[in-house]
Structure formats: structure tokens, C-alpha cells
Amino acid sequence: MAGMHHGLTRLDQLVKTCLQGAGPAKPFAQTLGRLMPPNPVYIKKITHTDVINALHDLSETMRATDNKAGPADAGMTFFGQFVDHDITLDATSALGTRIDPATIPNVRTPSLDLDCVYGAGPEATPVLYGKDEQEHFLVFGRHANPLDLARTCAGKALIGDPRNDENVIVAQIQGLFIQLHNILMSMALEGGVAADDIKTCAQDGIAKKVWHDHVNPALTNFEEVRRFIRLHYQWIVWNELLPAFVDQTCLDSAINGDLFDWDAPVMPVEFSGACYRFGHATVQFEYKLQSDQEAKGLFATVGFAPRPKDANIDMGLFFEMTGGLQAQKARPVGLGLGSALLDLPFVHNPIELADIEVTLTLAQSRNLALRNMVRDRYTYQLASGQQAAALFGTALVDVPEPLAALGFKKTPLWYYALQEAEEHGNGKLTGAGGNIVAGVFANLLKRDPTTYVHIPHFQTWSGFGGQSSCIAGIAAFVEDHRDMIASPEKLMCG
Image (cartoon, rainbow, N blue to C red; front, side, top):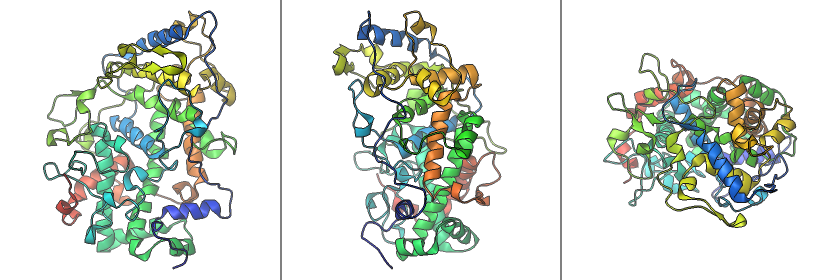
């Protein structure tokens, strides 16, 4: 087998080969970037404290004290969080300290490759995998709760991105994909129709020579299962997650054309620092985890610790399933935020904005909406919503009254995207915000020649059928087939 190097025996190398070989694609940058020039805060006859206070007053108009049902299933909020953790991680910038996005390493690979589940594969990230006959299975479960994530002796989750343990709902979406991998690995090893389906799908769109040169024969089943799952995951992101929250006209424009110039950053800070944070506005005030329980407040679901069995969720309450429970709904994208997000209980110290010599009050520091806008204005110095609308030629929305009354002429991009959704999007991102979110995902899918969009005849597997969505089909499939995994107790940790 040609060109094999230790630690590189993974399907990620197919991406590298395709991107650096012939064709129009180019390698993904591993830093953030900008779509538009920086937009510093302009102070005239006011102080930075006045700006902070004005943004705080604006954030308080967003406070919502009850649930409001939008079109998307509640689970889509947390699946969106899971996707965010698959493509972005800024571990460098500090709130209130100015930084050039081009200097910020993106710790996650900026492609829809599920590295938050697989890490760099069993050779490079062996701590996420079993041993002996299960060395290509992902560790999962604890003896006290077989459906929890595997954990270290300190209770920390053994997963590709630690943020996917931050609440019990996103942790169980992580767990869903881990279990799916282990079930499909069992099927691939067993052989039969399902194994043939996995192999056919996984090798579709990849030249046999490329597969031969870059996949270790010992890892063939693993790589086939991983690509099979990746292709379905990518399909779900574009065909289920985004249509749940983004106007379809924005998605169609993005996938059928090129919203961004070729030299635009793959992961613009206008996306990661503002528009994709629309998910905060879809979080409900409380959630029911199991059908026989009372609803729990949002921060009763905090993770980062071993999960008791009574916090295991019924997936049917989060993704609509045929003949099952009625799924809870996400909030519509708009200007309402569950009040819990304006009073974050885990923030204990005031934020110091060193660059402008201002310290937020503790109440301000706990306000997620304000934190988003302070990050916009003082950390990233993002272009305003009005500037983004001019870039894309979309209809303007007015500066919100609390800012306009003080003479502000521009709106922070995060707030502006939510305002567009409420005023013109019927509860979905539209206009500039919709174009930025749709454009980034379309760019990721089109620039990476191994994604499902480069397989014109791609169809989701029949094994995930029979439900209202593919993600619900996966949840039902996992529920029905988890007993296929041989010796699951050997994969448990903690």
C-alpha cells in the first residue's frame, strides 16, 4: 500500500488528497477570518460605559419568561450546538480583549467531519476507542448508567470535544452518534445486507486508487462506517437542521450559487461570533426530559459530570417520531431569549474589558445577550447588521428603539440577524443573517469534494426511514439496535 504513514491511516487523508490534487478545491484554513472589515466602536459625546449600558438595556427587552413553540423540534437547538462544536472552537480570544480573527486558531477542523466524535481516529486518538476486538469501537457508557458518556476517574467525558458534555441534552446527541457508530461497526463486522449497504455508500464518490492508497486494510470497516455516518450527518445538517432555522431562499441561493468570493474565509467570525449564535434565541425556558417527569428549568440540565439515569432523555420528546410522543419545540428565531440565559448561574466574577478600562457588573456579566454584543463590539469589532445587509443587498431593518433613542446608527450583527428573523423571516434567519449562515455551510459542503453534495444520487439509508426526519430515524434505529453491540460493558469507563 503506497504512501502510508503512521498516524495518517484515516479517511481524513482522502480530503487532503482531493483538496491538494487536481480540481477547483483548496485547503481549508485553520484560522478564523472576516467577510467584512473591522468596525470599531466610535465614541463621540458618550463613553464606553454608556455603550455597554445601552446594549444591556437592549438585551433586557429580549427577556422571555415562558416557552414559545416555533417550527423546529426542540432537539434541533441542541443538534445545532453539536454541529457548532464540530466546526468551530476559539480557545484563544477573551471577552472584551480586542483580537484579529486571522490570528485565532480554529481548534476544530472547519469541515463537517465529526471530529468532535471521532477525534483524529483510533491511531491518533486511541483514548476514545476500545481495545482488542473493539479497538475500532468508541468507548461509551458507565456501569452506573450505560447510556452516559464514558468518563475518566475525575468524571470528565471521554469525547472529541469536551463542550459536548456541557448539558445533558447535547451530551446525549453526542452519545447518539457514538452508539450509531458502534452499532454500524457491529453490522459491518457481521456482514450481510447492511454491511454491503455501508460499504457501497462509503466508497461512493471516492476513486478506488485513492481509497487503496490511503486506507489501511485493517481500518477498512472503521473508515467505511465513519464515512457512511459522515455523509448522513452532512445531509441532515443541510436538509433538516438548516431548513428548520433558515429561510429556504437563502439556502437555495447559497447551494446553487456562490454568495462568498472565492477568497472569503471558510470560517468567518461574522458567522462564529454572531449569526450562528442564533441558536441562543431558540432555547426554551424549560424542557421535559422524560414523559413521566415534570419539565426542568434549563440550568437543571447542566452537564460536565456523571449523568444519573433520571436525566437520560426520551429522544421522542426532542425529535418527532412516528406514533410516539409529541416532540417539544424550539423557540422561533427572534428577539426573545429564555430569561435563564440572561442570568447565567455559573458566572461568578465580573468581566473586565481591559482594552477600554471598563468592568461589567456581575449582573451584566451573567447576561448572555449582552456578552454576545460585547464580544461583537469589543473583541471581534464585527461589521454591523446594516453593513452586512449592504454586502448582500438585503432589505434593511431599523435600528432598535433603545439604541436609536440614544443616537446609535448601527445594530450589532447578532441582534440584527434575530431582528431580521422576527420582522421578515417568520421565525427563521433571513436577509444578511440567513445568507451568512447558509453561505458558510454551503461553502463547507462544496469546497470539500468528499461531502454528500458531490454524490448527485445520494439518498439516506432505508434503515433510518419510517420517521419524520433522518435524525429521528437515527434515534429510533439506535434505540432498536443498541443490543447488537457485543460486550458493551467492555466499552464502559467510569
